[in-house]
Image (tube, rainbow, N blue to C red; front, top):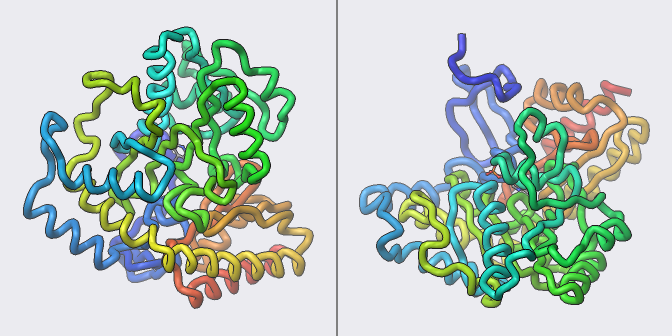
Length: 388
Ligand SMILES: *Cc1c(COP(=O)(O)O)cnc(C)c1O
């Protein structure tokens, strides 16, 4: 008998401890974890530097109110701004809070320049920006919003890839376009660089803001610190979360100078957002994952993983339809039943997770070893053979 609400369809397995890419059950079974809390544990489980950081900080200071200065947060914000397009950062605790805060920043900007009617956010139909009331209506998914009405106004939607409908949906009241640079839950669907460039141009022309949700694809997951970097464009606002805490719940909104004018004292807040414990952990994550050497390794491992997955696909053209993704955000779109495939991988001690579009999502830690990738490939190949 479980006293937990039934809002998750959980697998009948639990883990006692983790180390790097592996998880261990209480009866000693070892799993290769290529879920990593859904792109959260970017450095795997129990990374020694993160363990050390949390241990040291926990003896000093966990939490103080944002009524006071928090040097660890100042430090992290500076690092994030020096590394990216951003001029300012606002800390939250999760992805949904970060996307909602991004919307608040966009609306408040237009309010502060005397255009309060410019407040509508244009999003991709069936995208994913989190599960709070506003975020589900931003996502525009029937499944996620069903029974949670009344509908929150202020969101418009266009179909992914349909540029005509996107242009048509922009009105004089549109404040921002908010899209995931690579749709994670949606099935690892990437916005190509040329498209990001056009999107930036369009936003400039229409004088609206560009919000790129990098909650899943950001923080070096794509092989660049942000997935949009290869396009050379600069967004106005970027919500982040998942990877930045390495397993500790943290979210943030990054913004440029222009839009930050609206966020004056008292306009936004979060009790926990940016507390010293969270900031200490994220500082250590940031130091590790943003280095050139680290990013180069993500790209190399990704190249290897992808080419081998494509070989498996070519050997099993009736099972795997397409290998998608960028960096170590990998999607394997199947012809066969996704749930069955994932369960078979799990039977062979490889953990993966579903995404829409009949995609199996593969999310290794960013410091994954080549030998671990080879182990995963062998298991994937075996399952393909079994299903033939
Ligand atoms: C996971 C995710 C969110 C929501 O994050 P939570 O921490 O679950 O609230 C928002 N946007 C994207 C793109 C995500 O992948």
